[in-house]
Image 1: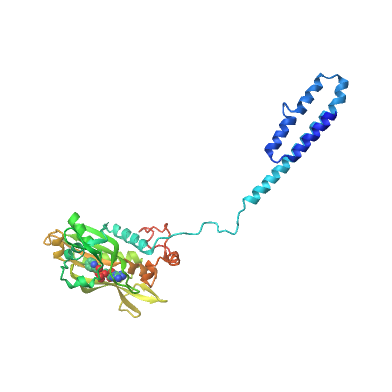
Image 2: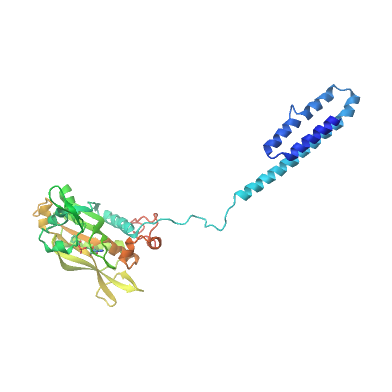
Length: 366
Ligand code: FA5
């Protein structure tokens, strides 16, 4: 009797002190498991006489009940404590925004380059590229600007100190026009391509930066004429600015590599300090803005590029990408394009999901 009372008390103390559910399970097995001491004591009842059993059974039964109750109570207490600890550990700050903040965006120049490629691809133009580190033969000579040509000086060229192995000057290309030469030499005629990319000139103010972007266009075929050039540019600008009232002015100009040459201007008005394209530049409240140069490819250039000018002719144009991006998306200082200021990029940048497509309209949602 005293044995059972002592053993029960010891078991109740151990249960009360059990630090974890695992330790509690050990106590249960020790007392109530198949080989636990309470179970073994219960088994001894079978071998007793009825009198002995009546005397011994209540003590064993009440020990079993007391231990089972204590195990249940302690289990509930340990589970509650564990749940509370977990709730304290796994806090959720409900004041945080539901989705992570947007990080990174597509630069307007990249966006506009994608838009250009999309529109011109629809007109059957391929996209060509060329090196930004050029030689003076591709950048000037083959474009009908020999060493003494005054137009070379007008380009404010960045030269490298070294020359190529065959004695050509090495420079940062001043326009995308050398890609015309490289493409014609590589694939001959007919040809229909655009070449977007970076160009460099030692020039800087609110509308000029030392590095900027141009897109070159070149179409060479047997019966290409100036009317094709005007239609192509007009069709492009209508799709790009997503409006039908685009008026272009082709102004006679001079480039050594085109003859005749025309400067391309677009009519615009100013609304709330922002330039908005559309309308005739000579209409009241309107003006013209220069977007680029163009013309019929000079026959000397075709010769340099290995194409017979008596069989083929073509048109070419070069537009300032940064200028048309500013016009479309309403920025007024070109220098901000290249400052890398995250606030500016956050404001003017585009989501990766704003992929330009002709069917959905090439304009990104601002
Ligand atoms: C040219 O570079 C010629 N290669 C264009 C061309 C190509 C004519 C094919 C004929 C046939 P121009 O120097 O005018 O031309 O530059 C073309 C356009 O680039 C300009 O109209 C302007 O939009 C842009 N641009 C020129 N300089 C800068 C600059 N420093 N910063 C930003 N944009 C510029």
